[in-house]
Amino acid sequence: MNLEEKADSPLKQKLRSVIFGTETKEGKYFDIALMICIILSVMLIFIDTIERFHSQYGDYIRIGEWTFTVIFTVEYILRIYCSLNRLHYARSFFGLVDLVSILPSYLGLFFPGANVALAVRILRLFRVFRVLKLLRYLSDGNLLIKAMMQSSRKVFIFFFSVSLIIMVLSVVMYVVEGPNNGFTSIPKSMYWTVVTITTVGYGDITPQTPLGQGIAALTMLIGYSIIAIPTGILTAEISNEMVRTRDLRKCSNCGKKGHDSDADYCNHCGSELEKL
Image 1: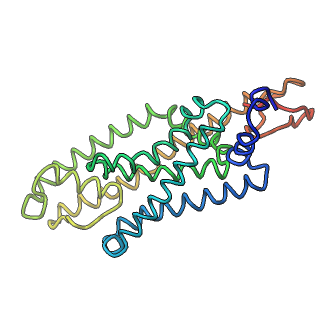
Image 2 (image 1 turned 90 degrees about the vertical axis):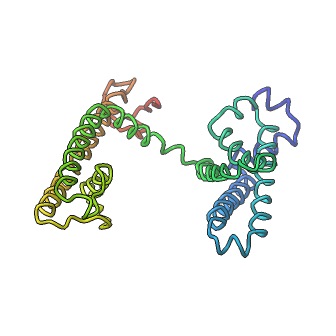
Image 3 (image 1 turned 180 degrees about the vertical axis):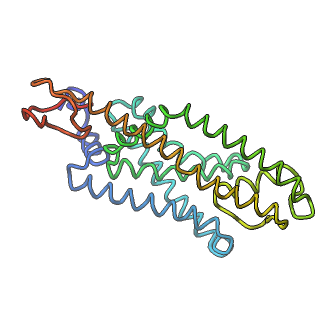
């Protein structure tokens, strides 16, 4: 326990151990109760968008929503109160998520137009990361993000090439089929081409002429052919990034490289590895 913690009152220390920690039984119960409140609150947001439930149970849903809003508000105030560094918590990712998840409800009282922003409350789901301590898995997410950034130029060139193919096919289909068959404009033809080349195929616009159907078949084949290209690009970059990450894991005792990102000890000498 550091000097700042010793200077705090017993109440503040107890609240800190319950709210920020999971070592105690009370802390575990608090996290479970918080996760239940988060899930129920998000379920209310979903249910409220269903017209039948909104018209029949709208008052009860609003009462439940405000109950959860008050609970989360009290929790946010307590977190600031018992935090060792209040400014650091308020400016942290989870501090901002805690604030943004309750702010739209209060804004709706003063600005009726802010009701649209109530959907921001869905950010409460991010708080599950804290409760379940899922941040330990963010290193894998960072690996994926780095791989995507490394392959961004290749993906952009691929996207630009596909865009050219879409524009050419759109013009061709507009000329071949025409407004009588649903291709009323080139943007409408582009919609059909995108839907077809991505193998979705809604079927709301379909070519009627034999030539148009032949072009449609070619478009489908092109779509299947190009699906694997971005996947291959991203897979190659992920593999390269994993190699670069393993090269960073160097044992300070024997100097051996190539350890996995989640390894704790050297597989050669058994020494503890430094954390990334």
